[in-house]
Length: 235
Image (cartoon, rainbow, N blue to C red; front, side):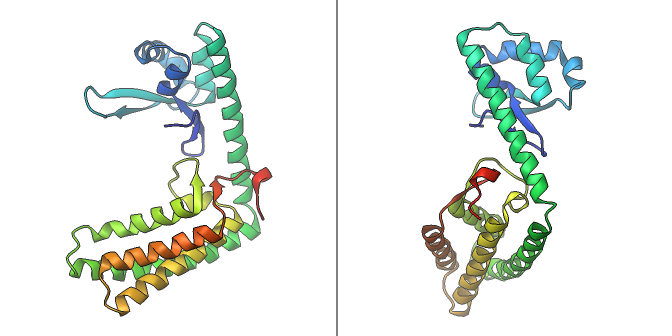
């Protein structure tokens, strides 16, 4: 995780790994604090952990919300580096809460809801054509054609947006204008896949055709950040 704070199930959180790195303390020492005050931390929210496997011994780390983080760092000695990190972490929690608030307000807007529903139509049409394409690619010998459902969405998102976080569904946090952009991309991808299959192209060339069309879009339409704060809106 490169960011100090991320959104996890609509809640800003950081991790013990990030805190340990920012405060220049051993992660094991921080874990000991977490386990010592586990009950207090659980009173301030769900104490979720994850096991990181990257060669060698697996590393267990915890996700902490703002209250849990504030409590934990009060137990640690201050130094200039620690104070600077606490200040940055506090600012990042504030920024992420502001973004989340704006996203939730946006999702209640009639204009946004209407755009989201219109987008679902183009998404449904694209999904139907991807289904045909998966069957087409499988017949041509592809062993992992099913991955195109995810690969195409990932390709669109990376080409058109700067993604600050990982989201279960990116489209739920897009602005109205970003929803229009992704809907146009869906149409471009669907047309490319359909054209390629109708002309009996190799499935890899068809995917490249779709990707090339999205790249052309990205060269015309400036990439925007997701999630976008109100003061950065381009619409």
